[in-house]
Amino acid sequence: MNGPADPPDEGYEEQRRGGPARIPGPRGAADDLDPRHAPEPLPEPPAVPGPPQPPRTHAVLKSLLGAWALAACSAEETQAVEDHLTECAQCAEEALRLRDAVGLLHPEDSLDLKPLLRSRVLEDCLGKRPARIPVPAWANPYDTETARLDALLRDFGDSEWQTPVRLKWFEEERRQSRRTTVAGVIGHLLTVDGLVATALGLDDPLGPEAPADATGRTEHYWSSAEQPITRQIREPWREQGHTLLRTVSFAGRGVGELSVDYGPFALPLGDAFLERAFECWVHAWDIAEAVDYPYDPPSGPHLNRMIDLAARLLPSALAHRRRAGLAAPARGLVAAGAPGRTLHLEIEGAGGGSWDIALDSPAAKPSPEHTVAQIALDGAEFCQLAAGHISPEEAAVGQHGDREAIRDVLFAAASLSRL
Image 1 (cartoon, rainbow, N blue to C red):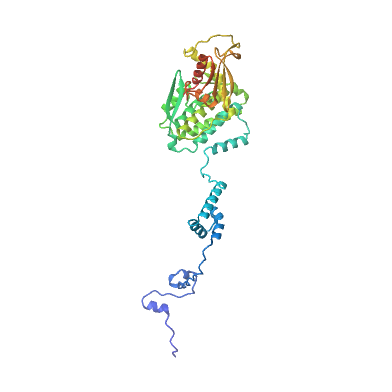
Image 2 (tube, rainbow, N blue to C red):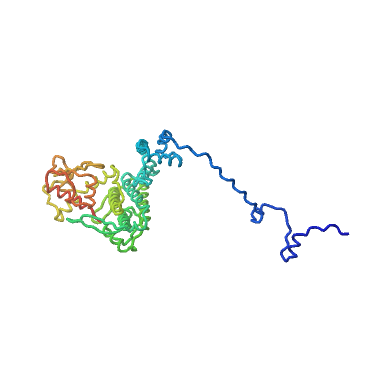
């Protein structure tokens, strides 16, 4: 018996028409992603305009001037105030006064870091964190100056390492110069520091066949190194400096009795470290000048020790020039240790002091009673003279007494420099 006809199955009808059969199932969350099941969007209600805002009165706008000057107004309030300022001279004058006052309360600072911030931070950290095994006092200037130079080099790009640098020194009666790069300067410091390394029994960075004098070592390195010398030189230079400081720190007091042979002369180890600190600072100055970067002189105590070394070397330098016929002959030879003719050297500024220089023999004893001349120089200028960066004629010198003795001492100071 036939009952009422059932509604046709959708899947059957689709299959009968040649399409794929589909069994309808419960609607799920995945169907919401199907655009066929997306609900029709509801129409947005029409915007109902609010009542028009009444224009702000003069008194209200004037009360907003303080907030406007501090940039604390909303965009709508700012626009209203600035529109009002174009029409009201009294409020415009008041707004200018308020804006100037805000500028005094909140000065605009540059977002760039100050150039010497890194140096001050390093100096502060080194001063507050003493080492477990302290560096000898005579090696402290070398430790500080190599760290300062390394801080200057740290952020140099490849192009800055190839910046031309002109090294200057004084030889006999003339100024000399040599052009290299920032990387070449660090290579020069590496090779001369190697003389201190060999005196301590460490490996020579140039090998056993390297020349014995400082100038010859530098020329040998520059001619044999791969060209151009690159920023890769920084790591071996810095590591050698750390090794020198570790060695003298662990060696104890006896190490101070060693001497460093520079070829034409030798220095006790303590003076050699001081000399290397001086040269490191001078060449850091050369590099900073080449890249147009500010660079401060050493601290007062360290600068004083460097000037003291130069002053102690002046009698020997004067005697060497006299033997070469470049200085006036001695006027009164005396026995070793006896008082003789003296020049009084006064150094002003940070690191300054006074020194008495024996004129006729390194073995003579300087004596204030036998002073025949006096020289006064700024500390930085004396160091530039001793580094060969200025000639004796260019030095601004306060002088009194024997002009011949003054000239000989100034030229002897310049002769302390070398490549």
